[in-house]
Amino acid sequence: MSRRTIVLFAAIALMAVALAACGGGASSGGGAALNVSVTATEFKFDPATINVTPGQTINLTVKNTGSVQHTWVLKAVNVSLTVEPGKSATRTFTAPSSPGTYPIECDVAGHKEAGMVGQLVVK
Image 1 (tube, rainbow, N blue to C red):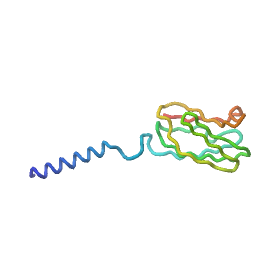
Image 2 (cartoon, one colour):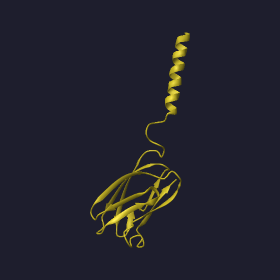
Image 3 (tube, rainbow, N blue to C red):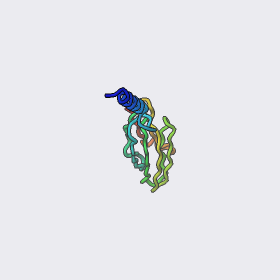
């Protein structure tokens, strides 16, 4: 094998290593995006627990099948959706980067106290 061929193969290998080190695009950890659909009724969320990985992108849809307005609030990442009866709302957000259990609530007066709560579990 000529010196020129060896240099060419070395350059190609070096570029491949450099590209691999750059990562796989715009995603910043957390794996694949998670699509979550939550149903809000009087007075619960279904599902009430959402399991995610740190930094994961979450595509959330909340559908209110109840007869009054509800909210879906996750204060840890500043997410708040207000959903009118018979309507849906969507939002994309990033899960916290630290593992833990983060409370979700409906902040309409009296709803949290009536049991309209949930949790985002990051592990």
